[in-house]
Image (tube, rainbow, N blue to C red; front, top):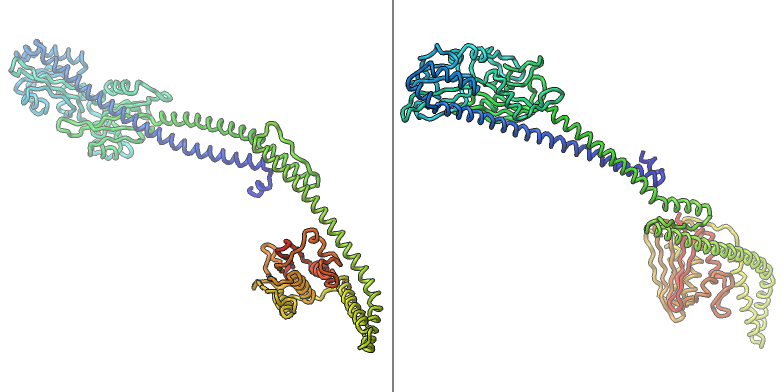
Length: 640
């Protein structure tokens, strides 16, 4: 995939890269967003349940307070005070039944000041039994003040209040998974809200008015709480919120429905919740499986007068309610991400196409240039500043390449012409030298013989001139033959540093080098080079002698070797501090017979011979010179 992408054009690379970035950003955004969404929804769900639980607890306290105010108000009415003081059971019975019916009490009793039952609204015949076992009665008798709260009644006590209340009280326990085991198959205790208020005749206690609401199977009680807290909200036909009253760990009043659609009366809370809420008196909020569905639930303890936990108050919200929020928000979020991604891709495609147009023009122009057609790029009016700058730079490059090609072509033409010229001159010189060499040998031989015979004569000096000029001509002929020779070099791996040392060892003793300081800077790691040792010595001799001739008053000759970075070629540098070479002569120094020396001092074949030797070795030679400062020759030879 990466190799394919690398071979693709820049537009495809940009599209794929941007698509990958957008998709990666989208995926990361989805992961982070959904994670944050779930976290926030769960946090909000727990906060909602805590709020609902607090509302239900407040409603429960208000229920107790309202019931307490009703009983207290009725205990202060003159007719009840007079009837209690006179122990008028018949009148009190009528009033108690009226209170029970109008205010929704399950139990309304009148108790004598000595703690015995005076009259029951549910059972006129049952009276005279002691009520001193009731904590509420004890407190009112002791303080003459009202008291209200949550309490329990045993089955025997509730049975005395009426058979219908006794039948409502008994709840069969339904075995529930994750609940604690119960030894008793049914719950027969009554969980009640109970209130006791003193009936005062002046400062004298005439009796006690006692009222209670039975919570066992009290559907109206929990349904009213549900309406107030959850406003009858439904999800898929099911109540979104539910409320329950527990006695111990058993549901005694609930609007949670079981699998059959009946209220889940008698089912148990999980042992985990029971331990925390009932045994430790703490509030529990969390995700719980209630009967047949998942709820975000909250449980809080219900206390009696002595702060003992009797049961629990529960509110729960269907987890589906929050799942719907998560699902709808997720769909909306994904749609936004999708639309954003599509818009980003569309915009990116447009921008990529816009920005790659100049690049495509450059690519097309580069392709044409590779074929030898030099085209300048015309800028578009819609191109931005960078694109126009790129076009200008490319056009500048095209102009530079054209100019360099022209220069290289000119240089190549000159080099070819020079090579052909040198070759022609070499062939001509070789032919002339061979033709001249034989008669020149005769002239030299006979002039030497005549000089021996005519010593001491007036002709001796003339004969010396003839002999010396003949010797000089023979030197020129030998130089021409050396320059023009086309014989195969005998090459072998050699140490350039050693060849330079050998050449300098002889030159240092020559009279020409008496005032010349020779500086050697030879690289110890120079690679061995495949060369003709004699030719390379001749090259060093020639360059060194020319350098010495350029320093008639003395100077410094530096010969250095090194390795060229990258190519690994062996480099020889021969530099002097002499008179230098003028610019007009610099391009002629390798031409045969060109010399700047005085007549009779040079043949003009030394540097052409050097040039030819280096060319035969596949090397390069370059020269740099400044008049009055010196000259430096640089030779590069391919390593072995």
